Length: 148
Image 1: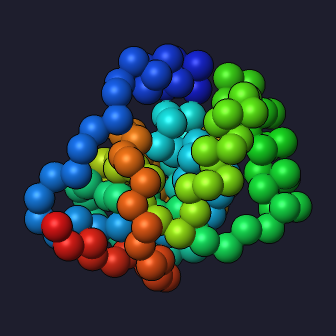
Image 2: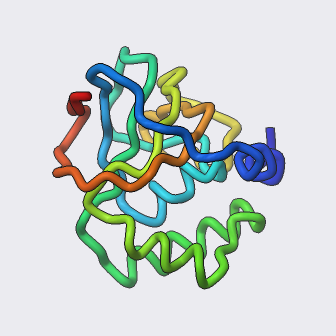
């Protein structure tokens, strides 16, 4: 599925509410976290593999680097022109740091992919992105549990 189709499907889905129980989470820097939960980015690149499959909360890192974000948005526009942001969406990206912003399904971990987002040693293949109301939460390295 191309990024245009991913984006159009995501825009039809309303944000969902929290569900109960512990859920794995992963900290991702902006703008990548925003691109994932809004359905534009379907692979998260990592230097490590995982056997975990299932729901994964997306935690937007608190740290912010203007150059890193600018470079990320340029790459996003190259890979997926539909990922361009309005001023309102950029303000949302700025404000959503240091907390949970959405959920995806981690469906695979690959070493090769046709996705234009794949560039790492390992790619976490993501599906069913959902935005969630922002929930401040401390981030960590690797997977971590977020209780109910």
